[in-house]
Image 1 (cartoon, rainbow, N blue to C red):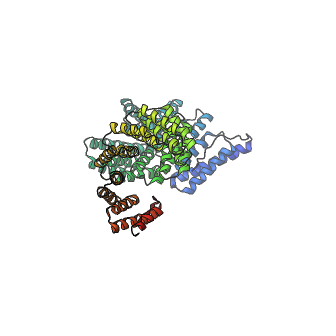
Image 2 (spheres, rainbow, N blue to C red):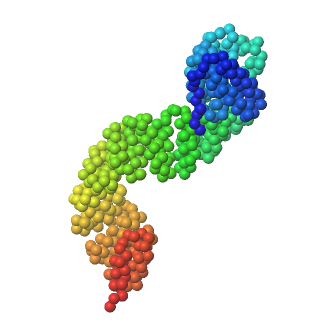
Image 3 (cartoon, rainbow, N blue to C red):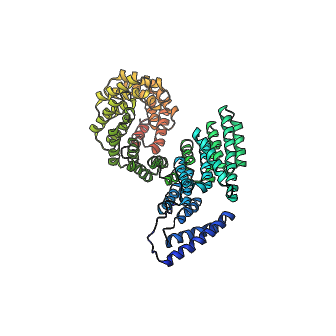
Length: 555
């Protein structure tokens, strides 16, 4: 929901408008009072309408701003930060208005900006020290909440006692106010007790006892959101993620604009429930209303949209993050990736290059070089640029195994076999326990007619990873076409088929090996399977397979 922000409007100063404003304000006060007593929504709406009218008729009345801000915040129409701005508008109109200071401090307290809230409350106290009982009590309550939610200092405890005691004395003749504040203070004292005992249980890892105590606190105090937060943290510590989410959602039911919980919930949903992107997106979008860390929020939203394959919104989110922090390499990298997914390769190149130029970490930047190099190689057909980018990545991180493989692949595609073999061998030297480089160098060696070396490479690849059907198939090809050993070759083709029953090329090669050995029926079956699968996989030319199948039965 877009926020309704009230700003002072240019109005006339004639008596008629001032009388209308006064009348609207009085009606608003009456409706507001009815709402506080009966909690009826129609009273609330009436109060808001009259406050708005009062602003229109006379935008210089400070009371309309802070009271309307209170109602709009309760309705979820504005954020805490916007409510603070409206209260500041009231202060700008009347700097010595004690209530404007109190309301401003109240919303700052809700935003957990306790330092600023304390400043506003003290300003209200200084305006009339002899009748400052109410602001003193409010300040003492704010200090107690600060102690409850944060690690309070000795100064906070002393301040709480001082303002509570002096405020109590000054409110002695104000019985309604005294009754209201004692009720609030009793509640906060209960929270303090539950919180202190709960922390004791947690410190000694008595988590079940702590959870039971927090549940009692929920039942016996009016601040359920605080203790649901504590219970959610306990559940997270115990890896009970479903319970954690349930508790954090309970907090948001009580206070939909609790920024801390929105951050926690968004992070948990993103980490543990990657399929539930909509709820995580909703949390981040609500966080944007606080206008804090917006670049990071857009960054997280970009990843969520990317997981949904929503390329357009992903690009938009990452772009908003980059617009706010253009020198952030991670934001530029992600925007480059989003552009690449959308096949906007020139834009992707621009932002990958920006991320590389910033170079926050050599190892990370080398990975970006790999991504950029693949665009040059696969989509722009620029072999020279791809090679230079891969080499730059290797200089940044000489231990990046994948970069050596990528460099070998680009040389292989350019049919520069010697350089391809050298790159693959560098990869093997770096990590001799990874089968990929052995498989790839085996192909390059075979192309160079180095049969024995190719056999050694493929045997090593199969030894390291016997579950790789491609290495099994290629080793079979070396035996069949290189050593003319159809019997040995057939074993590898059959193993490849066992690993992947839909491997069209392995059936075709098994047919060739069986044909060489004179097993006509077996060869026919393999060729027929290759034809059937090829209609789906389209790996081979069907006419070639049919020609071999028909040749089995020619006289």
